[in-house]
Length: 265
Image 1 (cartoon, rainbow, N blue to C red):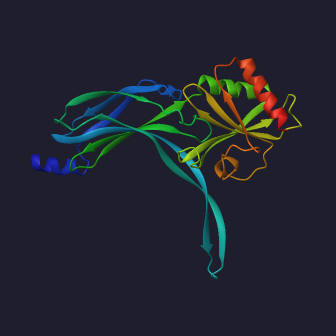
Image 2: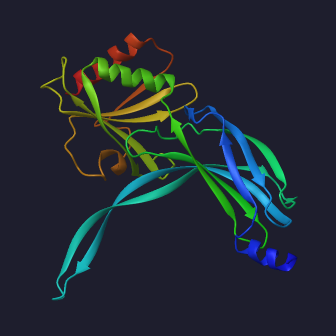
């Protein structure tokens, strides 16, 4: 029976289980996500190589593919493809042994990277826990996070609302210009206020730092599909407007944005 149980455990039947408990599923970039990883032993003793946690997010790309019909004619099409990016990795525990039915708990504390996308639109961020089991099928657990705006990001979003802009779309797109595989793009429409009728759209990219928020704006951009402005080039030249938001009052942020948009519309 013992041998039979070991065989079953090696294919995942009666094997150890992992469950991650997150203390704070709502947090902002730069804050710590904390919790415990619970391991419950299976039907037999098992060696665990390690426990690891990855912070992941999704992003999308627009890809072209060719189809051939029954007559041999080819046609090109585009499709949206979902990808996963690993934002950070953390080792919760080194090798250990879990006995049959034994319950063990491991605490963790991981900083959510500053470049983590906000949980808006189709953008998702989650923890993925891996229980690496020697000579058996690894176990995993997935826990969603809700990434909220930092105080400076909140100032920016509030300023855009005060200027009469409505956030209509947020996308995580493929693009390596910032050292990651993706950029998060915010699209605003002017629906009231002084810019209604003068500005169609404002596209914004936010780059978080510990002491400031760097903002790239494009005013009145024509739609270009998923592979748009920010995924093409992010150089600092006269066609793009960069702003730095530091420790400013809300009124100052709103005034700064108003002047920048007014200058470029």
